[in-house]
Image 1 (cartoon, helix red, strand yellow):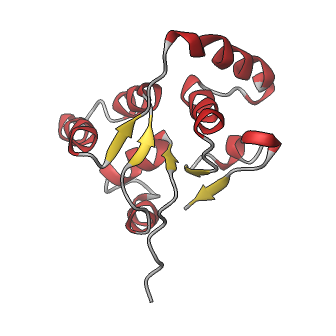
Image 2 (cartoon, rainbow, N blue to C red):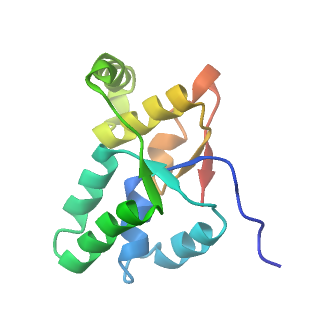
Length: 142
């Protein structure tokens, strides 16, 4: 029996976006399957889209699909304004030993701000350490 659609808000990281758009990616099947259980829109931000576009740079078709996913409503970009910069910098400092990237701390910041606890990511190394609001671990998909 298929898993029921997850209706809670879900933040999506770079890895699943790349895997879904790249059939040869080792995580393609698992991410496509996980995507079926998530009610759109997937929430993300510009640093994640930028990172994904960079990783997909050899495929203009995949990059176009990434952007059209945002335009079609499958993805929804949450705003990151200038006033978020101190918080992002603080998270970079806090998790420096992990070598976290801007996209990762942007998602953590948004998770705190929007009170979202579920992240669709392949980055278990970082997101098993990074914490949501009240210091709670994130629920990770797939």
